[in-house]
Length: 70
Image (tube, rainbow, N blue to C red):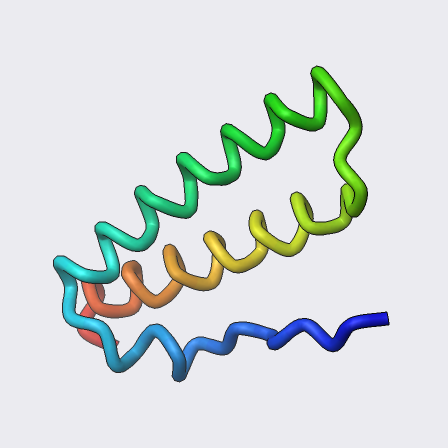
């Protein structure tokens, strides 16, 4: 079993706002493609969809923190 690196909030804290927004949109597009691919032909590791969703949520949380000034 491969050890996947877990994304943390600190990892996204080093990005500026534009880069964070771009990364969120890229990952959301990747999630859409992954879901479609899984619907057509089951992917090898369906838990990667869950992992990607959580990573996007972490990025959005960091984005919201910045908007609130926390």
